[in-house]
Image (cartoon, rainbow, N blue to C red; front, side, top):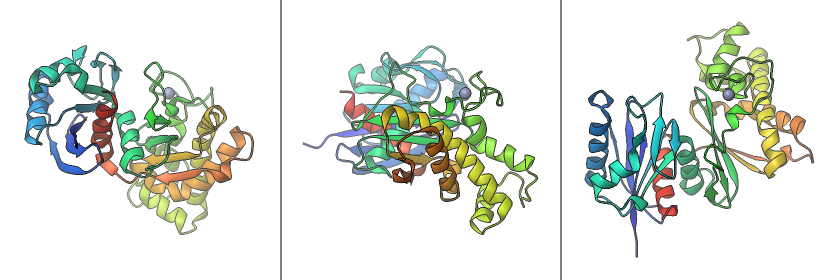
Length: 302
Ligand SMILES: [Zn+2]
């Protein structure tokens, strides 16, 4: 018997959502404005309406940024979701949709996107992988034996592996996390510091194209950034012997010019000469990865 699930990827300006069967057939997709200005209860009302408008399902998964208590389904705090403070998202959505609370699952948004990419995206068919999101920061989602692994809750956060304790201060309060060297934000900072000619300041894809075209300074910068990223992945390789990394987020469009550096960094920080065997894949689901993964997590959580 086919079952269907609804997934929602809740961000500050948009809730991307859809309905998918347990075999991965996408039946409907929709994006709404969650309307945070009206307060969190109204946001939950809208998400419940969205669930019904999509056709409903026998489980609901929701990916949210911020600090969560995944088991209880509470959002403790989220800089991106105004008013979501100690909010019972699982209970609130269960009440409004008529689902049992055990059929509503709240997940970190980066973890949800990782599950999506492994289920229906670039990592389809892989059992073990780390999905790395290269955006404003660096997010991570770890999949082991085909399932999300978050440890006590915050596992997979590869962006906060420290590669230089004397490095720039990170949003997490530590210094020299890999995201302070290799996120999109960091890449722009490094490009400007290197005085690179950009037609539009900070346009990383233009910079990547110049690297691709063989401009030496851009090529060097991309290799340097890639190497720092690889230095963050080295410990992951040592610990888990992962061979598959999937890169998403806006800056992953530069993966082809980052790749040589990433392999150098992994080689430098791990043993066994495995860097050349790594599969470094670019995510394929784009902004749909989050809701698709949230729906998949809801299936698995039953
Ligand atoms: Zn950090």
